[in-house]
Length: 118
Image (cartoon, helix red, strand yellow):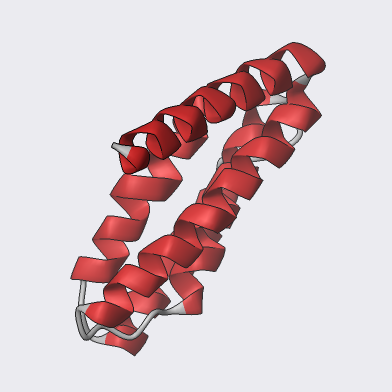
């Protein structure tokens, strides 16, 4: 029962934080999304380590790059060509790691949903 209460309070706090950042402006929203992304990346790396996968920092950089490129594009300050660099970082992580599973988890569970929040 205590775990349910903890999860509920965490969820409420997260909703308040996200809605507050949206109302505060785009740069605050970006900071909150990046903070959530960093915390999610740490948690995903911890879980992947338990499963026998080695975490790859290139996936983390690619995800952060995706969020920044999407934000820059929405602000009219970034070219879509920067997505090529993000893709190369992501692909480099796959080549370095030798497995696509962690890369796909990182992309589809963290980077894309959080960039869609912007």
